[in-house]
Image (tube, rainbow, N blue to C red):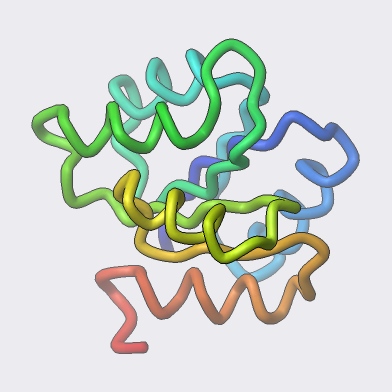
Length: 124
């Protein structure tokens, strides 16, 4: 199955997401800051990134834009997770290079559907 990097600064939510994704058969690497995301992507080359927008150290939008600028990560599927629900926030997230934008709160099953739609090994 897929290797999924989970970047979420809320410990409880990160644990819940990790549990649900592992329950679906994927492996996970949870991190809590923007700089950790960049380090982990470089070291581990995950198949997909779940990225909170409001991370400490470097916000998720900047992390996303940085990953899109770097080779060999411009095609890494990125799903932004955030409580920011205004259309302007969604537009900013997608403009930063995200493939999808999931507003909190969300249903774990819906998140898994979005993950599977973006994974190369799944056909949507």
